[in-house]
Length: 640
Image 1 (cartoon, rainbow, N blue to C red):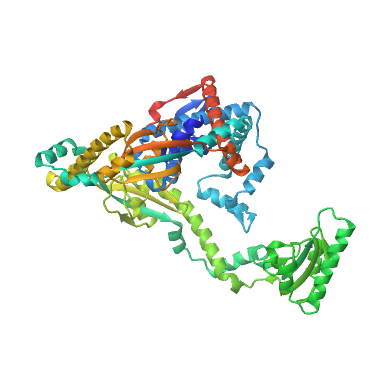
Image 2: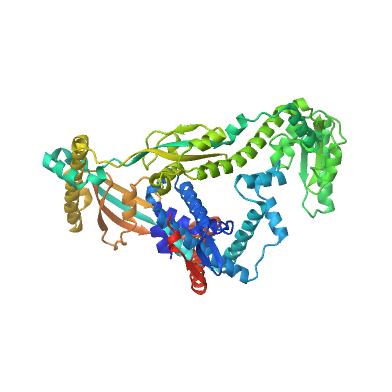
């Protein structure tokens, strides 16, 4: 297992591994939301349908995951849509059989647990507190009812219970950790001789016949990709806000409604303190000694010493001591009871007597008093306007987004009806291919993906509503298209000639490299060969897998070579991406040593191995449950 992880966890394979680890639970909760005779099942699992709409939704989520995971490297053309749909459907079936199993085991999420989970979500908080209004608004903006969202949470956390249970049974031994560290932290002693392909370019001759032959046999690779121009309408909260202008009556109503909860400030006092700590269980002697120390400090301050300087030198509250004892403004009830009482009985500049709390002995000084009271309407009017604009814009955006999407679907052959009905401008893009564009609407991968989908490109229909972010979406259609074309030879002959010269130079570099490799295997050192040929020689020495001072291709090959014997190095040839060729020598291997890493790193390794082992156990469990389940797949519905 460890060797497999080591060999495969790199580059794009690492992304695939991460995807496989997160997908089983990340995709869950996307079904059971759609019903109706026009929504046939794509699969039935133990009598429960997974519908076509649910599958579509899950595929969109998977595509969004891939976009987020790969970032700028995401290219829709690399992912066959039909294959992706089949994979997503299989995973939905996996999740369905898991949920069936979990429920048969009697696992449940109580109402109190669910309530606690919801109230802890940061996107439902306003000023640090759960807001029912915010909760409903966020769900509406994302197309959920409260019932749907809460049912989804129950399912997700049921499966999480299963995940935790499996993780708890995964045993990783000290030997496993040591073996992994030996591989992960392994160092290898590398040296190499590099043959520069550029030195052979002047020797490479390319005639017209070779250019013509390359053109004739590589037309598909040379062709210009298909391109489209789209028209689109855009709906956004920002646009809604520009169209919304709440009047003064609405502002005053909002002010009166939230005056007590939002616009009333309790009184507060700016405080600084000095603390002499006491242990939780302190002896009389310790209490007396600490009190004597705090009284001596108070005496210095009363006699004219600077409170801040005394706090910096003597306070044992490290955080505030650096700031001269400053705690900032505090409200009643925010500090320990004894301290709270003193704070709100002191006058500005007055030094308290020693105060005992569970932390120790304090000296308190109040440096400013901020009276409480209701903020006047004039002071918060601009804030209220912004909040009302945001609220009304979000509400209007949510209402219109559904209406616009439905109307565009009902009139699929043009954007003009929906644009005219809702007062939206139809915009046009420049030409773009499946690779998208560097700027403009086609810089968004979702837009490119939709424009080249079968529904939009081949059937000529409006796209579905495409959510570009939480507050912006577009609907598009293809207006013009250019098929893929093969350029004339005259357009690309210089490009072909340069390519052939580079290929010929690389072949000559490889031929020379193979010759030098054989000499090295016969016993001639790389150093002597480098001197004789005037080639760059590097003896980089000991490196690890993540070394940045060695080209990636050399690192990869260097860590694939078998260990050298005590008196003989291991040799290999390596072709580099730029056409250069390397004769590589592996001169030694040193395994990572578990004793050289600290406890925190050992814990990290153990947890990583445990996650991999848990995933393997989960997959084995899914395979068993699928064999036992009643599963019917309608493969006709997996294609878009």
